[in-house]
Each structure stands twice: as structure tokens, then as C-alpha cells.
Image (cartoon, rainbow, N blue to C red; front, side, top):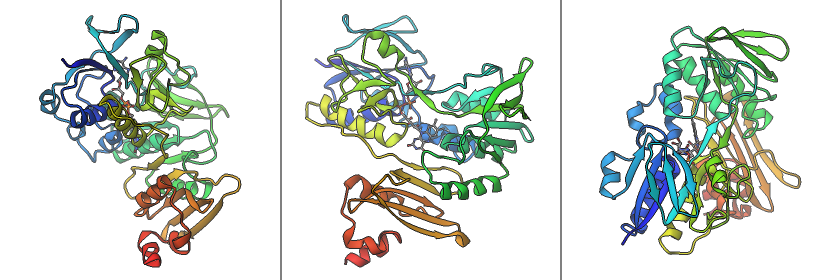
Length: 404
Ligand SMILES: Cc1cc2nc3c(=O)[nH]c(=O)nc-3n(C[C@H](O)[C@H](O)[C@H](O)COP(=O)(O)OP(=O)(O)OC[C@H]3O[C@@H](n4cnc5c(N)ncnc54)[C@H](O)[C@@H]3O)c2cc1C
């Protein structure tokens, strides 16, 4: 008889795990997926493109309803899991149902952080995490609307771009001295700032939000330096927090996320965590590639094979039309590393490769990102670059010619 396997969360990690289990262990488990959001699992990465009007929301679903049905997966979406009883091996769902499990997987992802300032709960102050957020933002983003986006990371920039494209007058405010400081060095970030401004977005750096002002609805953002920026809507994109509370309440070890080992096991037997809710070797990832790698390893384990997850390389692409930015791993260059740099401001091109112990340890590409995947693979593989070091900065085609 199939063992009952419950997955809490119906996002990208859950979908990938079900896909992997369908190929590795079809029929071994009776899978039930509990999802808080009221629709089938969708590709969250595409939300920026939906907001920008480049992709219809209907194109974001990862699998059609028939795919889940055909593989015998029971989907319970539109109702959150509210409690887990590890001793009784049950999950309680908000709709009043209780599900029994033999094995349990937390795939609850993260949520957007709200700024801890006065006015943060005012209507019109929104976050950018799920399909419902995109609906709310798009509804308010009429032509000429004044929008302040708080946060100059990847999500904030993508939100600002989508809003500007919809005709809103957008001001992007950021606490740090450069955009995407977690992915870009100063030079690439300066190029990005110019490109974002060229999209009609005002960018203010090194400004802190003091509070949101409004009477029944947000009307302005007050900065700590006293300035006020009028706003019909504010989108806050200042970071994410793993949804780990339900795991902590059940008694699992939780730091920032639900703590897992190299087998993706939590502190309780037969209970696992993958995706953004999991903390592995002290790291909570915020990207899809680690989610997929974790789902792959866990599926192998659940299929009865041995497999280990040893961490992922952080690699990011910005999704703003005409602005090509890529960053991976050690993009700044830690002590003891060397950097190879190519810059041609005339054609808006910048490349920086960080070398450590004869291997590629990180990369920043601005302008031409066609070799991003190749550089990522070199970093992941830890490949020795000595045979083609001279041409490495010019990309795969030349480097491979050098070796040939
Ligand atoms: C706008 C946007 C753009 C992005 N762009 C990129 C990108 O370009 N590249 C990249 O690598 N990553 C990107 N990401 C990040 C990527 O989407 C996430 O890394 C990925 O979705 C994480 O998958 P997950 O399954 O862990 O979490 P999620 O996809 O968030 O899924 C978790 C699901 O669990 C549900 N849930 C939470 N608690 C409960 C509960 N108690 N009961 C039931 N269900 C629950 C949530 O509602 C959610 O549906 C982007 C994210 C956003 C928001």
C-alpha cells in the first residue's frame, strides 16, 4: 500500500518534488499537497514578467490540473496547514480537515518582509511575493499614478520596471549606496542605475524610510532626512522571511529557517524541508536553482536511494527588458582572490571574473550575458581554468578555441 506523504506548501519546491517523485517512485506514496494560495502551483519567477505585462498570468502554471490528477496527487489548495502534530503524525488544515502522514515535507517558502515603521499597514502599502500581490499592484498601477518602490534589490527593480512600463511615475528608494549590492560590484551597479533611470524611474540611494503617511490610504513616504515623496501606492521589496513558524510550533529545530542536514531531514524523523523555508548549513536560499536541487535530492532519498545535498551556487539574472545583468557566487572577490575585468563603457559592457586557486569563484556580467550559463557551470564544477585563462573573459567560444 502507498505510504501517505504530505507536502505543506504548493509552490515551486512542492511542484518540483512531485515531478521528481513521479519519475522516480510513482505509486510508492499517496501524496497530498496542502497549499495556502487559491490556485495551482505557478512559476513565481514569472511574476515580474506578469506585472510588466510581458506574460499572461494564465501562462505561469507549472502543470495543468490533469497532470496532478493523472499522477494521483491530491491537491488541497486555498487552505493553509495550521498545525502539525509530530507524535500523532497529523497535519491540521484551515478547512478543518486533518491529514495523516507517514512522511512529511515542509515546502512553505518565504513571505515578504514588511518594514517595521509607522503606517506599514496602511491600505496602498503592498508587497510583491505572490499572484494576489501582482493583482493588487496592477489594479492600482494606472497611468500617472505615483508609486514609491522601497528596496533596490532584484525584486524592487523588477517591480519598479513593471510599474513604469504600465505608465506609473515611479521612485525607487534604496538604503544602500548602490542597487543590488548583494549581487553587483560598484561599477556594474552604477551602470544598472543609469539603465533603470533611462526607463523613467527616479532612483534615490542611501535613503531610509521613516514612515508611511496617509489618512485611510497611503499618501506619502517620509524619509529619515525629512523629505516626503507623494505616493498613491508603495511597494515594499526589502527582503524575505522563511515561513518556518508552523515547523517551530511543532517542535522542529528552527533558526532563520527550518534546519535541515545534507539529507534534507529536519530534527524529527521522517520530516523534511526543502526550498526557501529550509536552512541548510546556515544558509536560507532565495532562488529557484537551490530549490530544484534540493527537491531532486529529496526525491532520490524518498525513492530509497542515497543522495546528499551539499549547498548551491547563488546565480541571478535580472528580468528587465533590455538590461542584461548576471551575477554568481563570489562577485566581489574575497581576500586572496584575483579579478579579471573587461569594461567597454561605449557599448555598455562590463565583465568581472573572480579567480581563486586557479578556478572561477564568481562573476558579474553587465550588458552581454550570453556566457552566463557557461560561467555558472564552471563555478559549480570547480573546473581548473588555467588551460583557457587568457581568453576566459571573452567567453566560451574563444576559450574553447584556445583549448582546441
Ligand atoms: C517576483 C519574484 C521574482 C523572482 N525572480 C526570481 C528569479 O529571477 N530567479 C530565481 O532564481 N528566483 C526568483 N524568485 C524566487 C523564487 O520564486 C523562489 O526562490 C521560489 O519560488 C521558492 O520556492 P518555494 O517552493 O520554496 O517557495 P514558494 O514558491 O513561495 O512556495 C511556497 C508556497 O507555500 C505556501 N504556504 C506557506 N505556508 C503555508 C502553510 N502553512 N500551509 C499551506 N501552504 C503554505 C505559500 O503560500 C506558497 O504558495 C523570484 C521571486 C519573486 C517573488
